[in-house]
Length: 228
Ligand SMILES: *Cc1c(COP(=O)(O)O)cnc(C)c1O
Image (cartoon, rainbow, N blue to C red; front, side):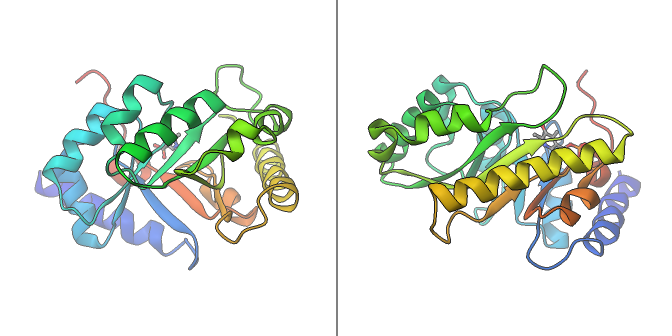
């Protein structure tokens, strides 16, 4: 146990040195125990990423209230109500239907919930996310413009799992170009400023290509054990 805790701190020290000011290190704590989160918290981390609503709620209830919880996983509409009271940023918005649900639940809590639009930039078929065309289709509708309790703060994407760093770089460039297009055409405000891209294996490339939030799990907390 003591060994593990030391590892988390050392990992954070090593990683933090490679992240420039202005880029948020989001510690991805999915599947990890609250004791691991507290170790990172004591190091100074205040932003944590989870991909399951129930898991996030449990951790939110037990852990310090100045933690900012980010939803990074695919979100089902029937789960939005559980996280709406406290979630800081939802990275994984990929439909108008989901946005309308977030808006409705945010309104009940008298909040405006910041969201990112998730884009499909990898070659793999399985990953969630929009194309630029699909996003433009709904952000130009009156229904979208009526949503008062959500605010679009930027974009999110995941690159392919591959050793081909040129391919990964091109996928991040693609996401940056989508961000630039949306910023110029639809979201001129300064609040549209986040590009959430980069994970343990590729975050340095992502930073070079303009990332503002890197989502790092296994390099901080070690490999995840889904069998538990
Ligand atoms: C799990 C996860 C991460 C973190 O992945 P690591 O490779 O462990 O750093 C980042 N983003 C999303 C969307 C994830 O689901």
